[in-house]
Length: 156
Image (tube, one colour):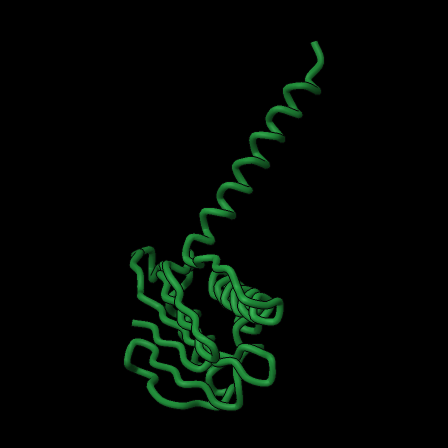
């Protein structure tokens, strides 16, 4: 008996599971109908920006987050680092944070968007010396020059 049909069945099931998981992870983003193509593209870019940031947090790739920093970004990292920072300072602060609070996973839970502002909240699960816990994360974006930039990141 050939293993080919079994392999195809397993591959199909695995692909279905991955697609279902990917769609389930987008539950934080409510799709809407837009009045024109420009608005649809604007919010598609917003979603992509949040996804890039989420991926950067998930895999400790600070450059995936910092590429959306403007000249200054407001940070509140566990109330230790609180204020406006240059993009390079903010990158160092997030790097230090992620070095200590080693990420297990990050996922967005909900989002809201307006004409020039967007906001998303999520859970940052981490481990310190084998002890696991989680923190709330909120990220706001601002829209100008046809791009979305991080306005603030709060981690509590």
